[in-house]
Structure formats: structure tokens, C-alpha cells
Image 1 (cartoon, rainbow, N blue to C red):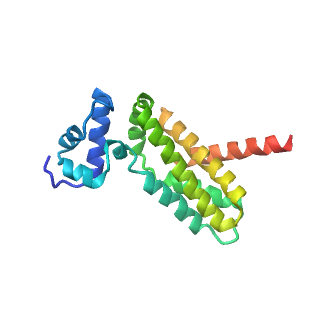
Image 2: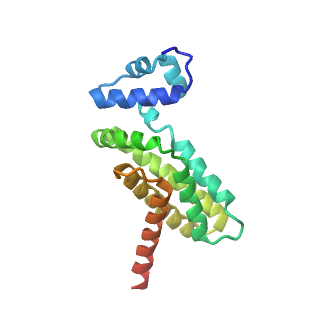
Length: 192
């Protein structure tokens, strides 16, 4: 594969997943990843600060998807509609091709405390970004925090169902279903 071929980020992701699955996360070096991807270590480090970040390269797109969806929600829209827009923005970032990548990542994440820590940081960063945008919109810190927590929990539960399903289902309806179930559970707690 020539070094000038496009999609260096995608090639590094595929190479990292393959190598982590073959020999483990800790045993895999950045040089091995770059070589498998047909790139130089310099290119790898120009794109990512370390091998761990290769797996989490979608974090910025997820945050942008959610925050842009919040901004696009109509002025005066109620909080539940804005939250639905945010989780839709998260889900819409994914393509059906990314489902297979997600399936490969599950055992890798489970095998490495370092990757689990980074995954928790990613989840928190997404929640904080959504909370910030919701606070800007509704000027209510508690409401923004609760909505962000429910939205992120719903997104992750829907994503887990998506990659675990034997069927090729679209992600967005699964995330919407989780959001409906989470908000129903919350209503039940406070009604009873």
C-alpha cells in the first residue's frame, strides 16, 4: 500500500484493531501500527498523540453532532425535543459500516484498563459538552445536567444494542427507544 493512499486515519484504526486483537493492546507498538497501515510513525504521531487515541478518534465528531443538533433545534422547543435532537445528532454520526468496528472494539476495551479509562473520559467529555450546550439554551444547570446524563446514557445503551444485535438495524431508532425507556423510568420513579 503506498504511503500517499487516502484515509490515513481509517487505515490506522483498522491496523490498530487488528494488531490489538492479535497481540494485545499493551504489546502493540505505534511502529507496528504505522507499518501495518502503510504509514510512517511520523504520520501516526501527526494525527494522534498515542496509540490509544487512534481508537477514540470519533469523539470530536460525536460532540459536534450532538452540539450542532442542539443549536439546530427550533427556538422555544421544549427540553425533551432538544434532548431528542442531541441524541439523534450523536447517533447520526455513525454509519452502518462502523457497526463492525464497534463489535471489534468491545473485547479490546474489556481487555485493557487503560482503554476503559479513556472510554470513561470520552463518555464524560460528551456529557459535559451536551450539558454545556443545554445550559446555554435553558439557563438551568440542574436541568442541563440531568438531560445530558439521560441523553448520554440512552445513546450508549442504544449503541450497545446496535453492535450486539445480530440484525443490521439502524442506530438512531435504538437510541430513541432507549431515551423513551429512560425517561419513562424517571417519570415512574417520581410519580410513585
